[in-house]
Image (cartoon, rainbow, N blue to C red; front, side, top):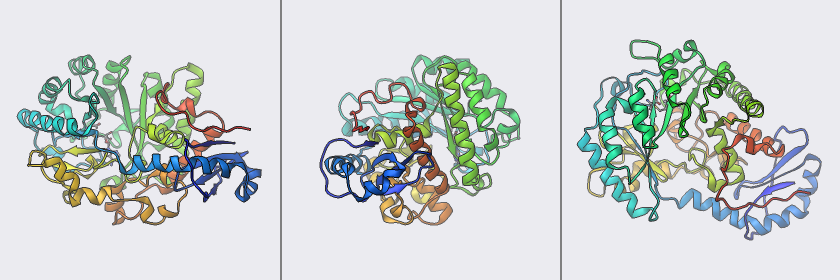
Length: 459
Ligand SMILES: C[S@@+](CC[C@H](N)C(=O)[O-])C[C@H]1O[C@@H](n2cnc3c(N)ncnc32)[C@H](O)[C@@H]1O
């Protein structure tokens, strides 16, 4: 039997048994505290009736609850997604940013970008512990379309932020790579297929030209750099090719990738929404392939969005992404700055004017946005408050993403978005890996450096 729980005390558990699809093990979870244990299936009934797990729970559950509560309700923002331009040279079928802005929107001027970073720096200085730097990720629409301003801003605020840049890769030439890598900026590139035919199905220029080979060339330039990653967005178009994509990423020495489900916030994205069961099959086959490649080559390709679920289970406070917790990180762990200077809880909301929390450079700009109705609608979304999540045992490993998707696709914050069945499958898959002692093979080396050693009971 193994279980997770730091020290503390609490009275009675409400264990929910979970069939994780493992030949030997089942899980018992206390959904409120996210306390869990894996045990022999034949012992579930006895354990529910009494026995040592209850004692372990009594000792540790309160600390689990406290830890989870702090993560869910006590964080202050420590990062910002920056949109230095509305424009993008691609017209991806599923993009959550409005097409009119991407096609003919404006750039943020250098003066405005510098003034914005100055305001953001002052805000984070007032909220973050001394010596910690906030993260600032240039994220949309295509940041390298406003390259001069972005690069000038990175140099001007090098001491104040940890910078990252997410790009479609088409403008990532030698000069851009030299500039960014010399400054240790983390770089994310987007690619949706192992071949041009598959990538072209979702990611093309406005005149329908392929960019697949240009992105591969950019990836070649990044080979050997530590801080880079690739995002593939999983849709009906590339689902049968996820395993081939993993092989391509591994062959090109991508250190970390993300296989993100397509967010169905805007109608365009729903046209390429995969079926949950098909998504599970393809996603787990791709994860299985990362494991084989690691065993064969000794080199890991971490799938960050899945790694985050594993970490959410084994060490919640060490998680890096904040989509899989409720409330999600939007508007409380981070927020987004649009190119027109408006603040949104997350980039996913930039196409939805009712979630505009006001202007960064206005008086009290950030504080006012954080307290605005627009932000509160998102930060107040809580899996305990609506069905089916309130009755779901894995609600604190899933977080019911995403509020923008739930609101736009299903008409309310108080409900699920897309892919509920997939998220359940994903947690079961993660628990099976833990049961088989394989979890570390899917995580970054040293992922738990500095985290508290958690309770582990085996007999
Ligand atoms: C909006 S883009 C901005 C940065 C840059 N232009 C790029 O392509 O990486 C950031 C990432 O979001 C992804 N993305 C856009 N719309 C999405 C959606 N509806 N669901 C999931 N990912 C999406 C893109 O594929 C890309 O990987």
